Length: 162
Image (cartoon, rainbow, N blue to C red; front, side):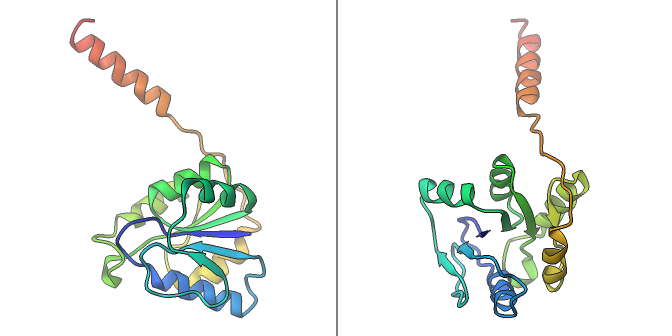
């Protein structure tokens, strides 16, 4: 199963939904697809969807799937990585009114360079990226959250001589 995650922001990502519809119709994508489409105005034709999911619904779906195809929002990506899923991430672009700026390009570049996600910078390359995703070997994402909290805690303690 492929889970398409578009987050809960006010921005649409119709281009991605349409491209997935095309790939399902062409039978490039043969797996079942389910999308959380958020505030997009495009309605998928060839796969199931829901605008928004409860946390319980989201967790039930993500546990069953093999691949996450998502916008390049850090929340969606990090959640998928937490569940150790293969992630293909496509950036929303400001020129299509999908976001206020193009920071999602930097997100996929950085995480792609780390080898923890499969970036798809250009939507017209999604078919090739998807077909090659079966061959890609990704690294396991290891969070440094606890180290950062320890460093901040130490800094504050040192600052105030606690």
